[in-house]
Image (cartoon, rainbow, N blue to C red; front, side, top):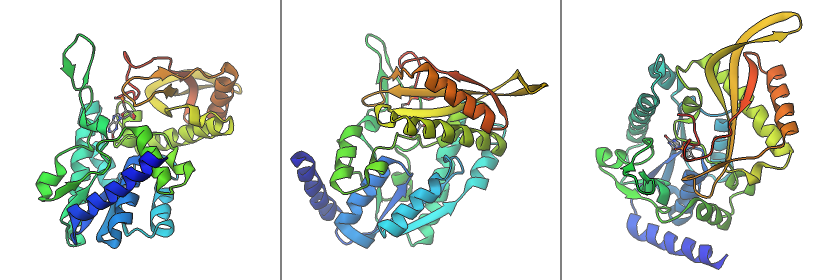
Length: 319
Ligand code: XMP
């Protein structure tokens, strides 16, 4: 793709011109955006870049290990891995409001990030994998007023506080273009093709209060769901797929006993940019098989439902 090759070269020149001999830190989230930004910037300025990965304890099964291994061992990009899960889960305890949860996570993320940046002696620039849709944060419905649906914590606030200039090489790009750029940079397809994952992670897939036990149940169900999707060859047709652990317990039967456990909702949507989305039309046999596996293999879930809401009027996430 000559367009992306040209874009990459242009951005590398631009980053070099902006940064000079300065030092850059980049918050790595494990997602495609910040990863592509980090690899591009590393290509431009090498070890003037340090990445900081703040582990908030809200990642999916084995996700943190995969990200840390890829960046440190495969790409040799200097990476600080901070396990701040106790701090995040502690402050989230008892919080049920979606925006409050996001605000707590956003604030703690900044606190932890700042602390770690100080420890490595600070930097002149802050790199972010901000995309064009992040820039136009508010969504306007036709005919209606422009309203902000959800606050996205990965935009704004941090650079002003830390007195750093921003490096945002993906600011003009949509998701599919970021993926094309990632391929151009030689990032493995298995990583590039990953579904987007929200900054607040599993916190917004656990409606209501979050506990380590609930997160553990959710992680297991989500991993089974994604495993089935991958095995059936549907992963690349889907924009995002994930499990949600509902704060509702229902009655079931297991053997000759009554169970009273949580409901798991499965979500999958197709989309071009996340702004609008259609629910994905799975085959019923696929859903039945996946539900059976989740109920049999995950203790704490005895019922599985599928979300058939498109966006609008629903949002992709449940919170
Ligand atoms: P919604 O749920 O608003 O999601 O339809 C649209 C896209 O944004 C992601 N999302 C977030 N990403 N911080 C993020 O970084 C957030 O607070 C957040 N909320 C939603 C969501 O996963 C989807 O890709």
